[in-house]
Image (cartoon, rainbow, N blue to C red; front, top):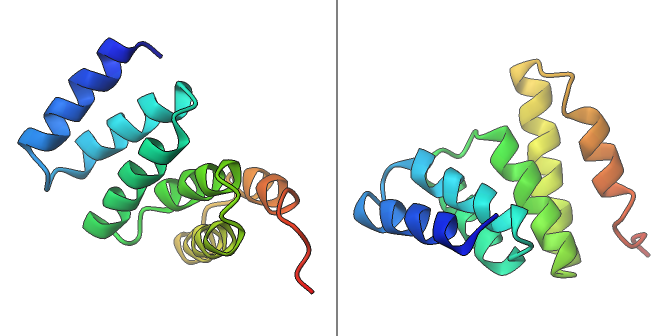
Length: 107
């Protein structure tokens, strides 16, 4: 993703901070560019605004894995799994399992 795209979505998110769609678009652009810290923060904002946003929880978990923030990643993925179950979504389970496999084993 281009820096221009990230800047455009960052401006939208700043202008309308309570619009979760702007934060999600920013997060997706940052994720695509490998800008994990920024993507994680934007997905976190999505979850502040809409705590039941399953995809944001899963994608935030992916960013946290890249940042090696293991406990937070596990918690975010567990939230995504809980939301998937509660909302009746089967599709995300492959991604959730794949990401969980990247976490260090708990002692």
